[in-house]
Image (tube, rainbow, N blue to C red):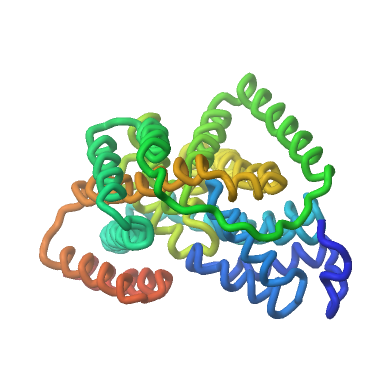
Length: 395
């Protein structure tokens, strides 16, 4: 772990201070991956807890493992400062506001979803959400698809998923194709890596064992909560590329496999996730609440985020090997390309469930163009709330 001389200007923060700092940050954590910049501002620029190079390596690491990048970056910062306990308090502090707010919004949704005003607002939010996912697919394509081979992998993924093939199978196939056909891709950079002591690995083993025991208890005594938690865990461990990459997986499990929600209701959950701070996968809380109330919300949320946390502390000691492995990079990039196709396909599936008319097309096109031009998602969604009410609620 980092030595004390990495904190020349400030005292090394306690776990309590880490928790409060990331709790405050989590209250304003709108924008998903964009929050990484605010974490850097806190930990590097303002508090000088870690240096810029260590932070950059942490972001690279979090982008290479499945899960929501921003909240995993918070955990990585805590890991460098206070070991696994620092990772835990930073992770929980950053994500707790999103959980609490989503539980409140989910409760209000259950009570008001049938009201005319709510129907109008959520009709518009569904259209806005389709545009958000479409813009995310375009962003993924611009970022990752550089050659025709990359594009072919994305198209194969889109066709397979749209045809009903499980996205997990699509991802595994994409990883295999990446390994076979992306031999020309990048050579991993070499730079120093913070040293993790043995307590991190021991903590990972203990926490994993505790989580496994909890899953067993749920399996035997609350099978409904076990199904929620295990489903969300399976989504998270395959969500390479950040929170948006989890949406096709979550949609498949929640709508197609378990039929817990229909597609429009799931879209409403994604929409609520856009006006909630934290990662977009906080939609898991919405799903859990609608399926099993507050216990369901807790089980689904823990199932989703516990996997992200364990991946950070479990793989951080081996970051150097992952970063320098050509095999891992080929597999990883193949999976990233597949998510472009998966996002395109899920956009089409969501879009097919919306009754498109002239006002809907105008709202969807306006949202998509605004996002492509760089508008903040939060302000786009809030503006959409108002527009939807007047566009679909009056008349």
